[in-house]
Structures are given as C-alpha cells and as structure tokens.
Amino acid sequence: MRWTKKWTAYGLLLTLPALVGGCWGKCTSDLLSAEKRAYFMDFKAGDYWIYRNVQNGDLDSVYFVSQTIRSENKTPSCIQESAVIQLKGIAKMLTFSYIIQGWDGTMQIDAQSAIGFYGDYNIDVQKPEKIANRTYPQTVSTLHCCVAGSSCSNFCDGTYMRFNRLVFSKSVGLVQWDAIRHPKYGTVTYELIR
Image (cartoon, rainbow, N blue to C red; front, side):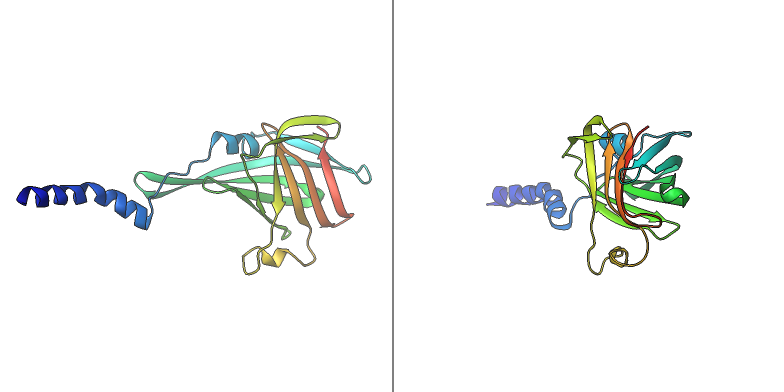
C-alpha cells in the first residue's frame, strides 16, 4: 500500500508540468521565420521598386527606408519577434510601414495619410503569379479584411486610399498591389516592372 502511494505521488510530480502546460498554455518562442523574412523583410538600403498602373500606364515607385525588428521576452526562454518595415512611395506621396509578426499570418499597414490595411496571408500557400509578363514562381497574397469592432474597422469605409490585395514574391518583395480610392485614379492595380 505504501509502495502504491509513493509511486502515485511520483507520477503526479512527473505529470504536473504537462498538466500545467496543457491547462494554462506554454509560451513558445515565435521568431520571424526564414520564409517570412524572404517574402517581407529581405531588403537593404537603396532597394527600390517601380510599378505601372495597368489601367493607364502611370508609373509609381517605392523605396525601402528602414527595418526594425522588435523582440519581446515573455520569459527568459520565450521570445516573440515582430518587424516594422518602412517604405516610401505609393501614390507618389506616402511614407508607410507594415508590421509582420512571428506568431501569426497577418500584416498591418499604417501610413501618414491614414491608409488602413489589416490583412491575412498563409505562408504555406505559395503559388506562381504572372505579373507584367514575368512569372514569379513563389508568391503570397495578402487580402484585406475588416472585422467589426476591431482596430481596422474604421478603414473599411471613408475617404482614404485603401489597399485591397498585396502580392509578395519570395526574395523580391511587393510585386502587385490593388487599391480603391487612389487620390488620382480611384480603383487601381499596380504591377512591378523593375
């Protein structure tokens, strides 16, 4: 009887960490993966992109400004990373930043002219896209979403330009963007030409 109680106590001690982790969750490090870096972050000073409006041929350019990686220690052994990438261009006037997090598949864009974008992407769904007569073998699409009551819901309507879809190519960056309420042209699609 004493032997049974003793081993029962040992068994409980051994399973307690698993029970605690299962009940209250376990903090896991969410670092920015190599895949996320390749699509959204592998840029350096001097990088720029030139886009053509498919509706009328107007040119627009975007250039890389800066990149900041934020690291938050939840515990000494648990780190969560996010990155803020700042670009300038789009509608020839905007400085905007997008945020990529290590722990989910969303992108958030903030800009000086109140562009709002909160989008979902799935890094596991990569597909080829033909854009401006060039085939990009691996792309990820980021689609705009608006959720009532969320911080992005005020960008669903209004007077500011809003991105609807962004297409990122691995090791290239943003290769196509669609928007509504463009300050000059209304509804637009811009494709990367160089």
